[in-house]
Amino acid sequence: MNIGIMGTGYVGLVHGAVLSSYGFNVTCMDVDEHKIKQLAAGISPIYEPGLEQLIQRGIESGTLSFTSNAQQVVQTSDVIFIAVGTPSKKDGSADLSYVRSVVQTISNHLNGYKVVVCKSTLPIGSSSRIAEQLNGALQASGASFRVDVASNPEFLRQGQAVSDALSPSRIVIGTNSDAAKQMLQRIYATQIERKVPVLYTNAETAEMVKYAANSFLAVKISFINELALLAEKVGANIDDIAEGMGLDSRISPHFLQAGPGYGGSCFPKDTEAVVDIGKRNGEDLLVVQAAIQANKKQKQKMITKIASRLSFNGKLRGRTVAVWGLSFKPDTDDIRDAPSRDIIQGLVDLGATVKVYCPQGMRQARRLWSELNGAIHYCDSEAESAANADAIVLMTEWAQFRNVDLAAIASNMRGNRAMFDLRNMFAMNTDVQQLFSYYGVGTYSEP
Ligand code: UGA
Image (tube, rainbow, N blue to C red):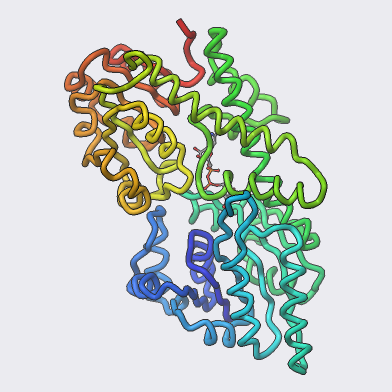
């Protein structure tokens, strides 16, 4: 079976590389020719553990190739996955321009029956509209064949994308076509044999499962973050509260880690998009709206927390703050919608000198945060960023932060040597807490 993947972002690339490892002939297509050249040479444009090796193995075994030639991919593929981005527009709705362009490209080059699979997170009803558009054009041109369209949302997490794609929590297949269903069953045969649960449903439900899952996880995070603010006021410990809640299997312990607010290319975008879809359909999604508001408040609260400990007269002029971790989560270089961006901006606005270090996120930050370039200083290590600083703000829980020599780092700092541990990485470590004026999230009582 020949598989074409339109779009080599996180989803398309990881999905393509994993399917090629199962022996399918996979061609990944992208309009970005520079990226295609890099990929053809076995270089991953993103940092994702295990991905580059998988790409190289696919290329070596001849099952994975890359091209910018859309016509060739459309015409030689039995199944075409649409995996282009659907970023947020200013009003929160999903920007479907990349999807429209890919669908038009597919429509221009169709030469026989194919299954078109929507992997991108698309507004509910999109897959059916794509089917109408493609089949409408085929009918108008007098073609003797049609295509089937299925929704097959992706649930992988960045940082664990390869292992999630190899062993997904579930596979959701949304289509009314038996032929499309059978094609997808063949594609996912390895996972299905390994007893990965499969949900068969219609396209609208599959599309909505994705929004429902991401919004629900965002709600969980905002819920625990709001309780963390309260815990600080009443002298309770949020990590213990999360553990106490999570021991109830109806709640589950996952996604109850308090922090600086959720970020990334998915939760902020998908929560806004589902609220927009709700409005268009006359339904106000109040719980999701509250999660979005609470997430904005959380980031602001983190700035207030830092400023209230470090400021003179509410300002941070003369203070130096080291920020550790720019990416929105560990093991990725992705800084899209990272909480670090808003928190750094808040500190800069208050007059602080900000020195940043991130194991993987700095290249992207230099590229995408150009407006901050003069205001922040990029450093090569944790120690360099913290030298002569008044405080460390630990934004992202990279494992390597556990292994740095914090005693040596603290001895090179000045003032009260504060540590704002916004991920509670050292909340159980009394040695670390003795080295710094230590502040976690929801783990201590306000004075
Ligand atoms: C998320 C979902 O978890 C995936 O299932 C989904 O496929 C993906 O979005 C997507 O739609 O493509 P991802 O954005 O990679 O995956 O990362 P998560 O691990 O979900 O973390 C998202 C944000 O929530 C991060 O900023 C993280 O730090 C934060 N978070 C997560 C918390 O603050 N607390 C938690 O307990 C968990």
